[in-house]
Length: 475
Image (cartoon, rainbow, N blue to C red; front, side):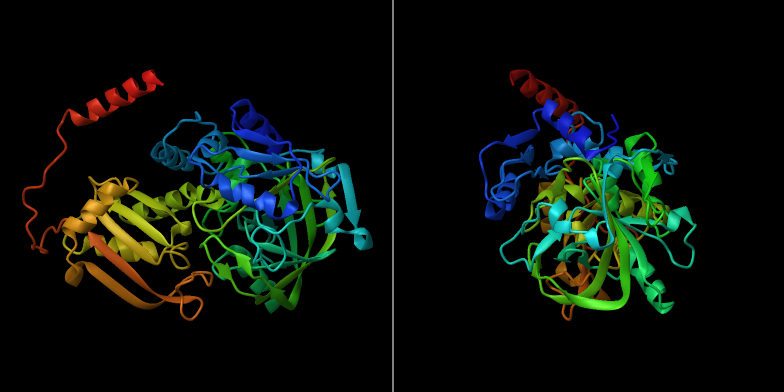
């Protein structure tokens, strides 16, 4: 089932027992973030959290941890709640092949019910804001979908970007934005500033679950996130026209914020507890001037807790990082079987592949580092044989312990680019990268003693399915 807005998905989660309503009065800080933090510690079936009794807020509706479990992730894709992680990734990859699916433009978007504009804009009157970690420099919108267009080609639908970037509220009508240099919004801003122009922007909050998945997904510059959302949800993504910018925005958003990134204006933003599990420091970042807010009656404020993994962000950007890397690698190396980029948005990646010749695995690892996403994120790659499941960490650890000779199989590449938020980067944005070749040598690369590996018994796979059925029947 495809959900057209956040409210429809929350209702479905509740019907599945995956929405927990907190009826006791809670404090905005630390209770809201602490509860979402705790949800990441209670297992892979954690529910979404709903708060509507928050001290100091007279009329707040806050949703947390909406994507924060494999159960909820499966339901967002319209899959059974108990779908295994590997099957969710394979479904993601299969639906990718349907791209592009054109969106459906609709009128009467529900976020048109209320408007603030000009001098009346007041983010604090619309949004129940609270800090996510006690060291954060302020209030953040961290689960928004930010829409921008290429100033040099504004009519190209594919170059219109929909991405997730952290936004700090720094005034009634001002936001600070962190545009990572490898992301599309940073390219749009650079082009606008080279022309001496502000960059129009739309920030949408409380979106349907698949649009949120796609907004955090590494895609080609001219590939439309709306067309990918249609492929993943197996139905056209509903969009509407934003009244001020004319941008294409999600039809079902709770809140649509429009304005401009002011050209060559910078202000200190941060610190913020990031997806790496560390705080990032304060930096001078671009500033958004908000000129219009459109919002639904009784809007739901959706926020994302992130910190030391695993938290909701890891479920949110896990499969949608694995699959683009898999598709990009397979385009040049069809031998690649699977990619596990679940860890810290792909700073660590595990790849299983067949080999053509000696040294092939290292070539695959280097290519992963030079994909559009890999340039900024992939800093460590473990390459394993095609019969190793990269999602099964005991198998990966066996390959690491049994097949790696550090002298020959570990490659260190100095002074390569990485996202500035990577804690190990020194200086920020620059790091050494590492490939660990945990594959069996082939071809000209004849070394070690790998001639007689033990294989699973032919009947083991059938017995595994049988055991799962027996265990399920017991439950």
